[in-house]
Length: 445
Image (cartoon, rainbow, N blue to C red; front, side, top):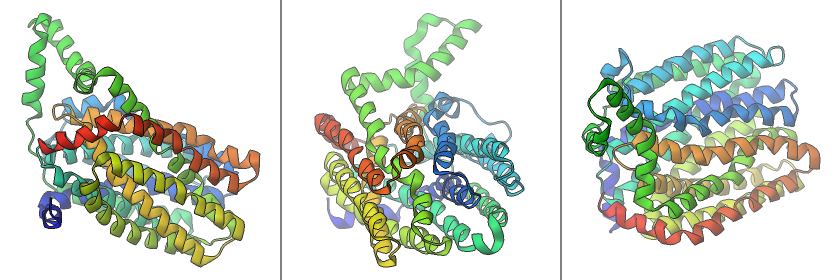
């Protein structure tokens, strides 16, 4: 595979659509993630409280429960846009209404109401993620292997663009407009994303044909009303998991699921407390905007593109191993900041290194999950895999603030985030043969 072949993959117009939908997927994490953490910190909440507030992200870990609906049910009225876009637009309209509601609430006075609204945004966002991931997979279901890292790269770049650019605006103007005013601006971003959803094209998929073929195995249910209802439930709920198990083998499939659970726990711990850490160590909202959002976004774009090219040549297994190890070691740079204090040059260097390792590992990880996903139930299977990864990131990471409060040490916290990556890397070495085989699977689409 030549460099020219890899670069040609980016000329496909569907890549642009993947990028735009990636922006839509990343944006809600500003609403309930970085911007909300900044607002809660400025409102005087403790680290433990902010960490526990992040429990709302647990909804991303269970979205596979309703993922079959995105594969099998068409949204009324909005379904005219297509199976995927109809669901995406519906969730965006919900998030717009909830964002406007958050703009009219003071978390310091109404923390419970703020939590409920944030949970609503998280639920709509988690549902949108199912449709967005399926949208990407449906568009490139039969693509050759050299396109997969490119598609994954544009999904990652889109996510970070949707997260970083609005996040930059939020922190840049938080002190002058107040956080309430910031959320009105973020509502405007959501309106723009709705417009982009109306512009992109629905993927052409043979999903229904494949589902019907799988359904032919269950002729024992008969053609009665109850039999057809049982068939629908079986195909919707059971068959996506059963097909995944058959394709990989039960033991290997379980090992893969455990690896997905463990791989990004360390990154999740760091991400949950990063804004709190920056503020406590002495960085201002404007500095956070300049370095973590703007500089971080630029680094992510560059290194994600570079990572996609390298991952084509390394393969999935090596890409995951190198990316995971580098991601773990980069966390120690935050410990360095905790020791030396708010030095801007070190802050910039840490953001660049962190975004490099995150971008590299994310391209490999998204490529890995995509390669594991079948074409008949792309929404359900990808949601299942992604939600398992989110389970470790959302549930265990909720105790990140508590750990800092108990130990009283940011240095120990960042050392912990490094150690947490090791079990996933060990498991990856154990299942590397199956991961390597995915590269051959990609060759055949």
